[in-house]
Image 1: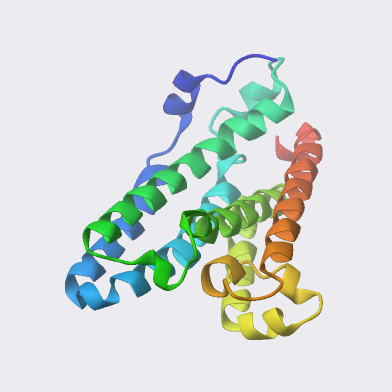
Image 2 (image 1 turned 120 degrees about the vertical axis):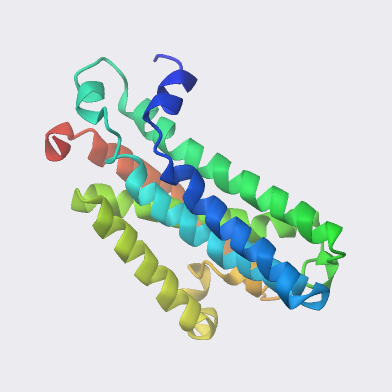
Amino acid sequence: MKRISLRYLLLTSRYDQIWFPLAFWALFIILNFVRGQQYVLDNTRSYLGAVIPLVGGIMSAYAVLEDPAIELRFATPIRTLQTLLERLLPVLVIQMLCAVTYQLVALAYGADFSTYYPNWIDVQLAWLIPTVSLSALGCFISLAAAHSTTGALLTGMIWLVQLVARSWFAGGRVGQYFLVFMSPLMVEHPALRANQSALTSLSLVLIFASWMLLRRQERYI
């Protein structure tokens, strides 16, 4: 298996993979100035727990099939798993940078994360679990439908339904395990750790399913 090529990633990455998440990052930084220090923690929870996962899901839906050199890659002896990782890892790295830098800004504003989250690990899980889950979902749906826009649209719809009906999901015997907003918004829920384990497992299943779908290269040429 060949090494992941940083040069290839830089040449084939589209600018919207950078400016799209940066636009939301800048918007919430501006909101901190406008709304004042007392709302910094609320803005941070909204950004980390809702915006970053949504952006990650949308970007992942476009990551693989919008590769301008995808047909050329299919014609070369590059493993499918490498292709998948080369398109998804940059999305997660960008979201990670946005999350970490925003937390630093929030801390500079005097935000006290312990008000909502017991420790530093829970702060990171608040954005990481939902982001990985929606990224895996966005990638899988786009490959299953063989259309990036369909993947982004359905991922956004699932995000919206879960956001609006999060109390219903949290109270359901099955839904509580697949609510992506439990980590950022319901840290005291008794099923929190089971929810995180279920979402992580589901993400791995979706990545595996995406890999299996991408092996059928004729669907995407």
